[in-house]
Each structure stands twice: as C-alpha cells, then as structure tokens.
Image (cartoon, rainbow, N blue to C red; front, side):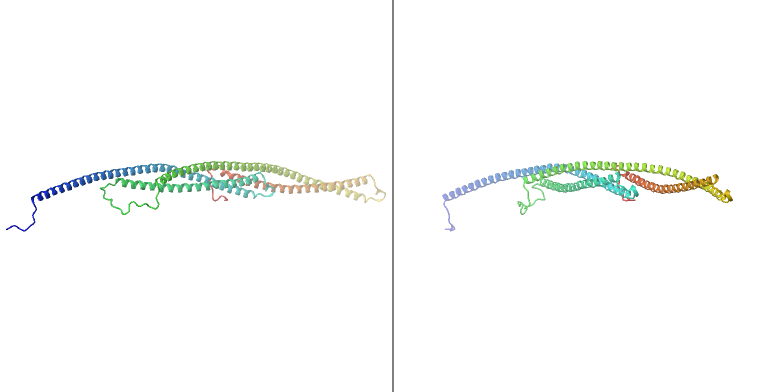
Length: 408
C-alpha cells in the first residue's frame, strides 16, 4: 500500500464544507456590504453635517460681523458728534476765558482809576458819584467773576468727561475693529487652509467673558451715555453763552455808568474851575482898583500933610504977635478949626488907608487860596480825564487785550 497515512474526509463532507464556506463568504460579503453602506451613509451624513455646520458658523460669524459693523458705524457717527461737541466746548470755554481776561482787565483798570483818583488833594478828594460808581463796579465785577469762574470750572470738568468718554469709545471701536478683523480671518479660513491646526483646549471659557445680552446692553449703554453727555454739554454751552453775553452786557453797562460819573464829575469840576477863574479875574481887578485907591489915598494923605503943615505953621506964626494983637480973633479960630478938621481928615484917611491895605492883603490871601483851589481843580480834572481816557480800552470787550504794563 503506497498511500500516505493522512486523514481524509468523505465526499459529502467535502460538499458540506464547500457549502459552509460558500455560506460564510456570503455572510461576510453581506456584512461587508452592509458595513460599506453604513460607512458611506455615515460619511455622507457627517459630511453634510460638517458642511452645514461650517455654513451655519460662517453665516453666524458673518451676521455677527455685520452686527458689530453696524454698531461700530453708529458709535463712530456718535463719536463724530462727540468730537464736534468737544471742539465747541473748548471754543466756548476759550471765549469764557477771554471774558475772564476782560474782567481781569476791568479789575485792573478799576483799581488803577481808584488809585489815580486817590492822588487828588484838598477838597477835591471826596467821595463823589464817580467814586461810588467805581466801588459799585468793583463789587459787581467780583460777583460776575465768581459766577463766570464757576461756569468755566464746570466747562473744564465737562470737557474732561467728554474726552474720557471719547477715549473709552475709541477703545471700544478699536475692540470692534479687532473683532471684525478676527471674524474676517475666520471667514477666510477653510479646511484646506495651511494655518489651521488642532488646539489643546479650544473650548475653554475665559474668566472674563460677556454674554451676548450683556454685550448688547453695553452697546446700548454707550449710545445712551453719549446722548446724555451731548445733551448735558449742549445745555452747559447754552448756559455759558448766556452767562458770557450777560457778563459782557453787565460790564459794558458798569463801564458806561462809571464813564458817566467821571464825565459828570469832569463837568462839575470844569464849571467850578471856570467859576474860580472868573473869581480870580474879578479879584485881580479888585486888587488893581484897591492898589490904585491906596496910591490915591497915599497921595491925598500927603496933600493933607502939606495942608496940615501949612496950618500949623500959620498957627505958630500967629503966636508971635505982640501985645494986645495976640488974641483969639476970627483967623485964629478958623485956623484952629481947620487944624481940627485936618487932624480928623488925616486920621480918617489913615484909617481908610489901613483898611484898604488890609483888604488888599485879604484879597491876596484869597487869591492864593483860589490859585491853590485852581491847581487842585486842574489836577483833579487831569486825573479824571486820564481815568476816562484810560477806560477807553473797556469800550469793546471783544477787542480788549490784557496789557501786562497796565500800570505804566
């Protein structure tokens, strides 16, 4: 027997094995087909899910970008209004500061005029209508300066608030621009981009993060804050405008009142000066008349002395008569009577001459007083005219410039 000793199966077993193998292959092929079909379906479903998920995310990012852009445009528009309001506030504040400078000029001019008028001497150094007007002007200017300074302080604070809000808005716009830039970069990314990679923890949530509702509320709060600040600023600018023009009007009225007082004082001083000059001229005429009368009285007195010497010589000559011829006859009596009359006349004329000289001296004294008064009046008149001329720089508040050498 030349057959190898190996186990062999029967032909029915062979057919059974073949049938079993065929069934196993069919089962595996069916399983593979089912798995392939399920894999294809899963691949298609996940592909569609991924595609539409990416599409939805792109749409959401684009919508979010559009929303942020819309809010950014609104905020930028309000930012322009805010910047314009800041410029207008600065201009109005500058105008108020110019008005304050004009007030300082008014203070300096008023104090300088008061100092000048204190240089008056004598009876002209009085508390007249111009002094009262200057004092009232100084008190009114102090009140106006206090009020305008408070408004300027409020304007400075408001400008600081507006600039702080401007910086906050600029930062917010920068953040929105950065967000728009990031969203644009995200929209440009695809699954085939080279700058994509797996991240260690992309779903982490930062500690400081806002919700969408909070973000929307903050945007609305920014708009509301800008609107409120603009309304407050416009109201303050209106108050500043009215206060500034009211202050200018009040200062012009005070200036006119003081100028009226100075002009009235100048008029009264000139009238009194003219009256004193008229008195001086009349006194000079009276003095000339008295001097002439003194000379005439002196000549008349000299003539009386000659007549008296003649009379006394005759009386003395009669005394040299001899005998019974030495008697009180009519010539003797008439000579004695004439001597008495001459003595009375000389005494009266001397008294009158002394009175005339005394009156002449009185006129000289009064003339000196009048000349002193005229000097005082002229000095006071020059002082008031200088003050009135010095106050011409206050006539136009818009053109007035504060001078550092104001007291020169």
